[in-house]
Length: 267
View 1 (cartoon, helix red, strand yellow):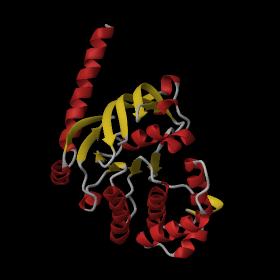
View 2 (cartoon, helix red, strand yellow):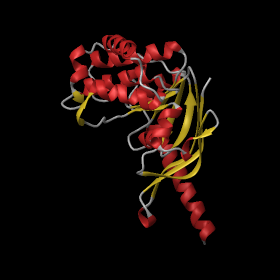
View 3 (tube, one colour):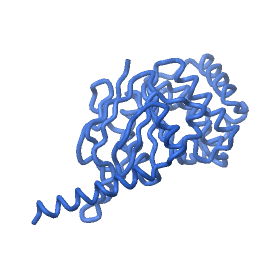
View 4 (cartoon, one colour):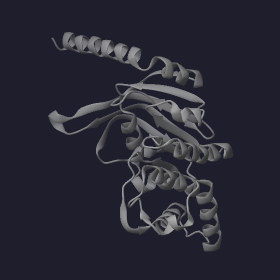
């Protein structure tokens, strides 16, 4: 049983007078076998949370802790976080010209496991997972994400997750840019991972449509850099019917109260 614990996490972007606080005290716990959906309007800090956990240098941790099985994630380099068992499926996967998918995947597996997987077993595993994601075998010889469609990029991200077998998988808006068929295939790949019960999934999304395919155990509403509501799958259904308007209004009112209180204290 692995556990990712986030406690009172504060994150800023920029330096000095230009610094802007994005995350304003996030608390979240993700355990093996659990699927948590992070939902919220654009600009609420969902992707900031994902990239901060992964160690993106753009984001500065100003407070709080992140631990994986008791180990301090924030003290780890990006590659150490991956070897510890964290995986990030990016919203906008980057192109890597000159590096084939097959070489990329085997190099990543070698770096994480500390030794190269046995070639015969590895090739078999790759073929099985690619077939499950309805990917042509020729895909393995293409350069990473170069000329890929949106659906191909997202299938490749899920292929990585399936082969690297992380403890916690963070899926950042995996549904963005997908047509119905690609969304189904990608969701089925995630569900196969969930069925194995060894991985905790943190699914970040703006829309509820992917949750028709991947039913979360927990839903967290994210507004203005913090979790403002939590519940089960029924909360996602409520959001589909009512949207985020009420949460945004409450958040704006709370921000006004906090600002007024701060001005009084300073005076």
